Image (cartoon, rainbow, N blue to C red; front, side, top):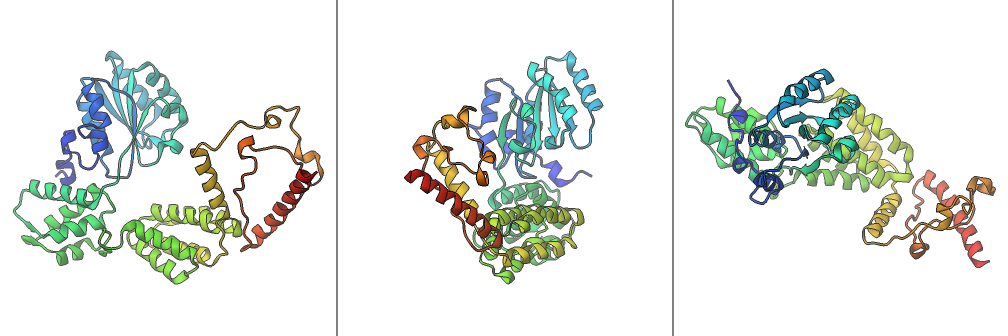
Length: 405
């Protein structure tokens, strides 16, 4: 028996929910099809956002052969057999799932077929291709980002799924809302929840029954309550404010939702944004600890997460490096830049700092039009940054004396 999510999978772009910028009337893929052109692409976005569905619809729009390849489980020999089988055709459409897991030797083999157009690739990934996919592959593809689904979009999909179900069952509106809030922005997950309720029903599904069967606490993750990202934000703000109990409370909410990846990403950001140079040893500990979280999994992972959050909350804080790089990026984006000084481009003019006392010598480093800009302002909340500040102050003193002379 096929799952409900499979039965109602869209077969046309008109049925795809929430990705109008890609497959809507003026979407980039819609325009591609209208112009009868086909290009290799990488579709990336959250799980359940419609990447696979869109890829399969594209494949049906052309008379080319198409095949699927999973980069995490399939090998080079399978890819070679797929490409060899497609040599009798003008081009073959190759849908590659989890493309970020593709091994280098397979990428190298695929590259030449992308270049000559004999393979049109549609890569699928939940990760940003800008840092997870080989640049040689990435540069030969159009990159399209799929959005996560709003609760409203998920409810539309749920009601569509309910209409296609072969039994006459009443589902209260607040049940749809509850499922949408519990599905972590994934339509597929939401439909699977609905199907569980439909199978277990007695003709009428109300909120009490839904909560009993689905067993995910209703944390009111919608715009009228505590949005999921508001909880992540609450975790960070509590850690930043050194309120350990509040931090543990928001961590507990996130643990109940079982989204370890989002928790880990946020904790890594917190470490370097809010702790920074006040406690760099703690920052260095976060990554191996986060890998332990993924290795152990829930429920035991909550012990490791609790340790991390308490450590972060009670650590000395410094956002000096966050402020520094944030301002530097804003300056570059607004056009505040210029040519490198000649001494950085000409080895004969460059002074090698290690050849001077204290491994420092005054010379030009910044472009002339921003030579006096200041980005980094040290703080003294942690022992390590206090030590850095001593050298920072010494360097500034030497520069000031040199400028006076």
